[in-house]
Length: 340
Ligand code: NCD
Image (tube, rainbow, N blue to C red):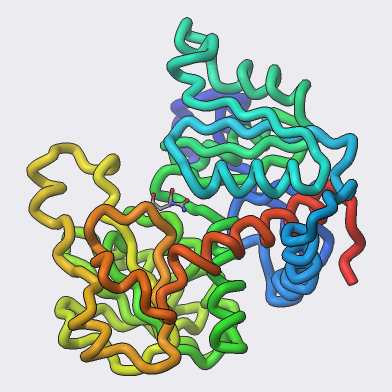
């Protein structure tokens, strides 16, 4: 090791080193779910085998006691409709208790200056698991480093959104019947879209996937990240025009330009809605089996005229799968269902 001066004490170095979340390796019990990089194909399969059972439970009139006696706290530092709503639906449908803390920087003692770690240690008292959404990359891992219960990352800044990727992969598999040998298109904010990053992680586990990335220059992936996925075997083609979209792809995954990640409104306005999914584009490029996905919310990048197309799943099976996959995940992480 080079003999250079340390600018921090070893103790500080230790506490600032981000821990790597444990691999799932087929066993979900007690694990933090921070990144899709924790998953292998078998673990995804294990989860997906539980999902249809959860779908049945959700649609049945009777409620379930799978999560009876468990308490889950969700702490959302950023707004959410689907992620927070489907987690709450998932946990309460399985008989668990759900405590939702929203906007803690405004409404909790964090507004008085309490730090993140102290707040997490307090919330830990109420939960057998903590679900967290935060604007900073790495925040979920920071929470996991201080609490002893499993932490589920519901989105950390421009980092990751693993549970969204799981429901997206499930939706793709439900329609294409497979997760390898696919051609997909991802459009919009590829640089800042955490759902895109986690989905690319997921798709890179399977062979022969080709993903076209359609985005303005400013919203392209950093070359280093792009290369990481390419090294894993994912074929990635960056395109700049809608005319370069391949015909008959298996899925289109449209995304919102992430306004809250921009420094100024002008910069945002210059790149927003450069690419819009509309009926003309569907007519020109979609195949009979192409599904149209979006993690939502949309803010103009999908024309409402597309909503009734049976290939549009962003208002139907895609968000519903969010409930079922999150039910399955929570039941597995809390050790209330055996993987079979
Ligand atoms: C996304 C998110 O929050 O990352 N939404 C979601 O969780 N379904 C996408 C977005 O906000 O654009």
